[in-house]
Amino acid sequence: MADRAIKLLVIGESGVGKSSLIRRFVENKFDENHDVTIGMDFKSKVMNVDGIDYKVALWDTAGAERFRSLTPSFYRKALGAILVYDITNRDSLVKLEAWLAELDSYSDNPNIAIIVVGNKIDQERVVDREEGRKFARKHRALFIETSAKCDQFVSDVFKDVVEKIVSSEYFGNGYGSDGMDIGGNDVHEKPASTCNC
Image (tube, rainbow, N blue to C red):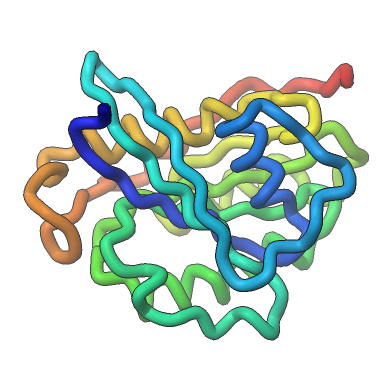
C-alpha cells in the first residue's frame, strides 16, 4: 500500500500521445488505434522512491478545444504537470503556452513541478530538440523526449517528475501554497536516440 499520494496532470493538445504515454507507463501497452479521450480519464500506479511507495494518480485530459474549459477542481491539489507535445507537429508545442496559462490560472500550487515532453521520437521530426529544450528552460521545467510506441524514456518522464516532487523541502506539508519549489533552470535530458521499433 502506498504511503503517500501524488496527483499528476497530463496536458497538451489532442493527438500528441498523452493517453499513450500513460497507458505505456501503467500497463506497458501501446495501441495504435487508441480512442480519443473525452473529458478526463484517470489511472494510477504505485512508484517507489527511496524505499517509500507513492500512489501516483495520473489525470489525463482531452486535448480537443471543446473540452478545454476543464473545471478548476481538475487542477486542484496537483503536485506535478506533464506537458506533452508532438515532435511532428510544431503547433502542439506553441499551444503549450495556452495550457500553461490555464494551469497557472487554476492550479492552487504556485510551485507545481513541470516536465515538458516531446513525444513521438519514433517519427520524422519537425520540432527540433533545442526548441523543446528552450521552451522547458523558459518555464523552469524539466525536459525529455520520448516514444510511447517504442517505449523509449516513458518511465523516465514519471520517475523524473515524481523524484523532483518528493525531493522538495515542501513535499509533505500539504498542497496548494505549501507545494514544492522546483527552483531555477533545471532541465533534465536523456540522450537523443532513434527508435528501432
